[in-house]
Length: 445
Image (cartoon, rainbow, N blue to C red; front, side, top):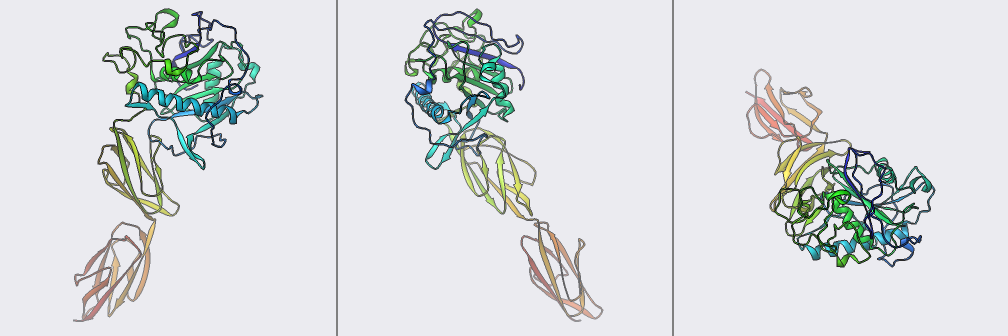
């Protein structure tokens, strides 16, 4: 597993009985709160109507993301011997994502989770990656060690970005159908929010997602005035309708409240973690475009997902987002320089503001310089390549100027240059911004 998970919270319904997580004490703190009613062993996807997901199966995270910034990426995870029910479960995931988005905007009109979306032929929907664990359903059924095993499966599938939170719907059997989900995050930002899709029938998976996602954002931090004590630490205990209450109940997400009083984990004025500032939330009230003008054969990408352009493009970010842009030339080309908010040919560090704009110039790796001579004399280039008495040519690195010098023979003089060079001075600098011709005309003195 990557790093050390700081918090891994398993959410269930009802009573406050606590079960062991199986994770090492220095790696995770896991709370398993069991529901009071008897579990029903029916897959949730088979019992719940959902928005239809119209995407296609993928074993990789598609890029670029439709919404720029630190993403929340969604994963469908199955055991090695489990049936692939992506079509059904992904529709539940899509429905839950839309429900969480609408609920969050209702609780805070200035924020919503930045779900990883991609454009399909049928519209823009969740980018869902399918991961098949190397372990069987029987091996993953015991709650002890399951969170670590599933997190490891996500990482082994190449989903381990420090910039990404992963929402995982695990579609496999469970030895404890009262545990609805778990969530954890490490200090780098990598985080996993797991929904046990076959558990907790009748419980809102959208509420489970929102709850576990907030754990990956850092809620509820030590120091919050209403933080639970003992085995329920990491939750709030003052209001059963608080989304971060240790028992989710069977109410819909619409009945939940995002930090009542704004004093524990969201929008508070204390010195502990405030998840309203999370990098994984879109700031709906502070969006700024970044205009990229791209010339020539190449691509520009950012260190934060959402910008990967092979032509001029404009992407929209949270204002104040810091980006490191990198330029990759196409085969046979070279990167020449940045312009606008960046300069030179090294890396480009830019902060997104309302007027931020960057230009990137690519060009063929070299251009040909052809020189012709009339009369008696010689033209030489300061860099090796041109020694010309009649007509000659050579290739030079693009956009690296070449200095030409005209030397008349005895009894002759330079009358003028033509083509890429002008005037009658004996030296001329050619910018090499394209394939270029120059002619030196000598006449008798």
